[in-house]
Length: 398
Image (cartoon, rainbow, N blue to C red; front, top):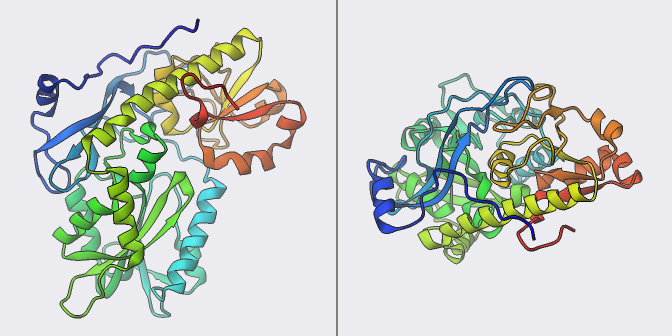
């Protein structure tokens, strides 16, 4: 019988007294409210963006990693983060590039990229800029701090510890009659797919359309239109503009449909979000059970994608070099390092050929079409790609 994993040290089980103590002093990053609920606790975790050199001795420093849901505005958020961002720039996935091109086409079709439009972009530190795509359409980029007809935020807002101040900065740069475009990983998608390891240090907010509407209202803006994409299991591009009586249309059906999805998923319900705690255990146990079975069968396993969301999963599963020989990543900046909190090295794609693994655990599901096309030799040699998100306790790997 497979040994069951234990939750990492530092988890707070959801008793009323413990929750009350845990909540002491926390203030919402958006509305400044203090009423809320801890909904997910991943224990003590290494900084998800610190990839030490492969030969650096451990143990790595660890920090609490918890999610809190504000009862006032509904924003799900990181409770605390004493870490300092240090992440090496990763390789930009083809799925992210394709989604950006699709989004620009949709925004242009909606008439939001006029011939004289100027753009200001707030990008993610992980990459994914749209400026080149917009430049091809003649949209000029304004210098830092200047107003623009299109202010674009591509997964950037979530990296701001002070959500209210960061959103205020962005709306202040929207020129009269302009639009604010916010792209985010949707909380209803996180809940629906059990993506508990979307929680990480450096990502301070996890948005629903419902919460963003409340945040925008506080800034004198309202959502007007939205587009949804399959990236990361469900991302949204939300268009918002200033409130002006009689001058702006109300939210259209695309926005109202997001509100309906939020209500169905229970994005403001602490009990709905606490299901992520169960998902964390089930998926970590599933990964560990599968890795032990592969090890018992004498099979070599590699990972692919040295992503931040793999860090907590590997730690919860108790995975080490004996279970996963190495994690392959296309980013030269990450090669020669190791996964935070483990002894698993990060290596280049050449190891796929030299190791001839029986299986490669894929930590980012969006990469599957890309890696299958780029490395046909894996399957030709009898190896298989295994989606880490499909491994659950009690389920066999497909």
